[in-house]
Amino acid sequence: DTAVSQTPKYLVTQMGNDKSIKCEQNLGHDTMYWYKQDSKKFLKIMFSYNNKELIINETVPNRFSPKSPDKAHLNLHINSLELGDSAVYFCASSRDGRGGYGYTFGSGTRLTVV
Amino acid sequence: DAKTTQPNSMESNEEEPVHLPCNHSTISGTDYIHWYRQLPSQGPEYVIHGLTSNVNNRMASLAIAEDRKSSTLILHRATLRDAAVYYCILKGNTPLVFGKGTRLSVIA
View (cartoon, rainbow over the protein chains, first blue to last red):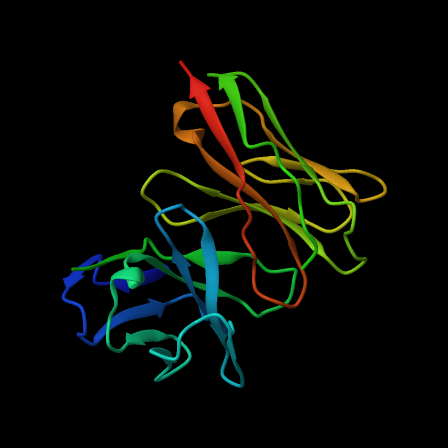
């Protein structure tokens, strides 16, 4: 069983559309994250979330919103997609947010906005 | 999180040991040292982490300097599959912040 799974793996869509990327973890972790990797390969944290607190990177546009129906899922909703949103998005989870625990990443969703 | 400094790239021959250095002179007492790698077209993969003592696991070893201002990730026998970008990250209670990492090339 895949520990952190993302769907879809590829997503091609037009500017202005609204789309969602789903993430599920079966590790029993308390904290989940979304990262964005742009064309220059820099990985940037977008959100971190546990069942108590959502921490948003202040540079993330408010068109992006995470939604967590339960502890095992953290979906990413994107409104009014722009060309600059094209990137690979990675979901991750960890036992909790403290330094002594490693992260498990999903295999990524490649979003292309045309 | 405090910053780390890694070489942009390194090269190794297959089946030889590889020592990937990382400097983190501004590390705080509660920061853990984490290493991740990202193979081409894949998500980042946890490799190892430690606080003060050296650590070993099935993938690698982590050697931490006594003053904790530097560390070295050791791959005991590099294989072609180890070609990746390796990230050294200091981790406190905030999310992992990735730098540019070291691109490791393995030559057959």
